[in-house]
Every structure is written in C-alpha cells, then in structure tokens.
Image 1: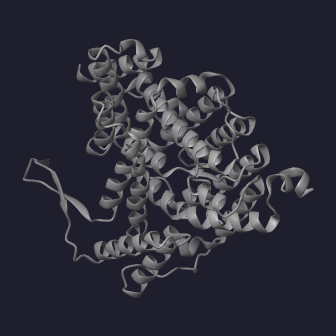
Image 2: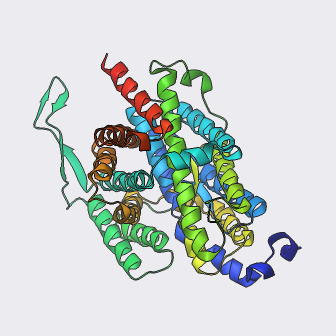
Image 3: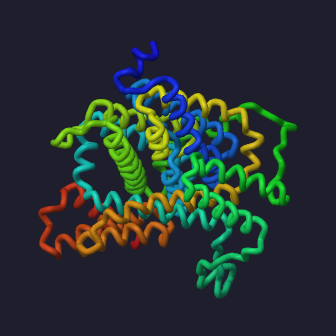
Length: 450
C-alpha cells in the first residue's frame, strides 16, 4: 500500500530513508513550535492556543502536501508572515488579531483561486525576479531587527519626554549586563557556532541549550506540571475570525485589500522560491523549457494555500512551505512519505507543552536574528550595477526594517520601480499589473495625507 501510494521505488527511495529525512526536517524546523506562539502572543492571542494551533496546522497542512502532491515538504506558520501579522497588521495598521485572522483566511482563499486559474502565473511573470529577491532580503532584515529588539539587545532612548510624548527616539545597544540580555547573547553565539559547524537541528538545539542555561542561572523558570494538560485548549483562537469588524473599521476596504495583497505576494514568492529552488535540484519538480509548471508543483501550491485557510480557522498566521524541508531532501527524502513522518513527529510534540511554555524569549529571539541571516543570501543575485534595478531594490530592503513595516517596503519598491523605468525610457517593459498596484499605493498615501 505504501509503495502504491508514494511510489518509493520509482523515486529511488525507501521507508528508512524517508523516515530519516522526515526526522531531519522536523529537527530543522521544529523551532516554529517555540517561535510562533512567542511572536503571535504579542498581539494578545493566547500562547497555549497558538501553540496548539501551530502544531495542528503544521500536521494537517503537511499531510495535505504528502497525500495530495506526494512531495517531501513541510508546511507551517511562516516566521516572516507571522512577523507581518504581529508587527504590521496588528501593530502599525491597528487591526485586532481576530481581524488579522480574517485577513489571513481571505488570503488563503485568494491564493487557492489564483493557483487554480492563470492569475498566479501572471502575477509571477509581472513582478521582476530582482524585486522578488529584494522582498526576501527585506523581510530577512526586518526579522533580524525584531529578533534583536525581542532579545533586548537593542532598546530605544528618548532625548526628551513632553506631556508623556517621547521625542528624539533612537535605537541603541541595551545594558548587556542584564541577565535576560546576556542569556540572549549566549544563545545567539551558541546557535551561530552550531550553524557554522553545520549541526543538524541547530536552531532547535540552540533553543534547548539556551533555555537550560537560563534555568541553571535562575533566569528561566522550571517547567510546572502541577496543572498539566496534554493539549492546551485551542478554544481561545478557534474560529475567532472577525469579518464584520474587518470591513467596518475606519481604514476602509482599500487598506484591507492592500493588506491581503501584501500577504498573498509574500506567501506566493516564498512558496515558489522554495519549491523551485529545492525541487529542481533534487529532480522533484521538472519545469520544461517554456517554464510550464509540472502537476505536482501546482498541487503543492494548492496544498500550501489550503494550509493558510486551516491556520486561520485554528488560530495562526499564514502557512508557508518551509525552506528547512531542503534538509530532509538533502537526507534523501523524495516522496510524501517524508512529509507523513514530519507530521507524526509534530504530533508527538503536543505532549511537551509544560516544557515548551517555559522557553524564554531570550532563547527564541536569537533564532529570529539568524533566520534573517539565511534570508540575506538572495542579495547577491540582485544586479546593483544597474541603477534601475538597484534603486527599487534598495528601497524595498531598507524601508521594511526602518519603517517597521513589510508592507511599506513593498509599496516603496513598486513605486520607485515604475518611476525609474519611466524616466529611463523603459515604460513599456513594466507589466500593467505593476502599474495598477503602484497607482493604488500612491492613492493610499494621498488619502492618508488628507
């Protein structure tokens, strides 16, 4: 039955290899169990409910990929998309987390629709590759910045405070003698060494060791099993999407549409990049000379979008296919059986809540910083010698962390891309879709100014 379902022989693999690959991917990406609840709980969401929602979403989304697409990938709540949800959607834009989940649900439905039609292909062709790469780099810097702040390594000081309003607020290095900050620095250095040595599951091991050191030093509380629940209740976040409130707030439908667009674009290019970047090398996805996508790639993207819908229903941010799946592919994983094993390992993690609950932000924040490092590798693919490429790419990359908004970075990038191309006489090279969204972005700023 297993052979018939996953075609192991034709993919030159076996059950043992798929098991090892599944464990490898789980070890590489299991940090999401700690990171996602820590990030999303800053919106007011219940930590335990997000913990359960994250694991259940990962299990269900990964099983869909395994059984529908038969490829060795894992899907879970994306770190970059979770940061966008917490710090931009619920932070700077002011949506409640319930309204944010409604936006995530709409995004998931939209991605399913555009995948089933030709719209997704048109969007992919419309946005130049270098802008896609710049978005990835910008999100990497944004995540790093958030990680440094959450670790307490960077703090903010004000030159003066008048009537309770701080003026001249600037970032600076915090007091490194604080126990929590010192613990975070230890975690950053220790995990960096593991990554340099290419230790499998470096992120997970970094979190575990940093937490244990925090316990030994009295910085981190010990696990409390007195009120032990095998599975923290998901009720606080289950089906809490607020669609009515979403479309009655002052910002209006236009901002909602722009927010959904930003989520869709970020999710879209994360997924495409991971699937193509890892799948072509291993022979999992074979794209023809005309750029046509194979059936299993289209199925994989549909499965990924379905995962986002499931996540919104259960109570977590956008789901995306994980780059760490490449670790399992490197270990020999070639079929959906690898994903089945990944889902099983995540199911086992449901029994560890009292231990996971005591993991401090000082152990999680360094992982955000180092994930940002891995996302910066795309910066080398951008042609910085071409000023028409460099200017919009630059604004995407710098505006995301400096404005503390991924959305703002994309908006600036699109607008400057159109402006510099028109001035350079390349107006005809720009897709009508890029013109459309750039105009919408400009209108948004005009409306907000008025």
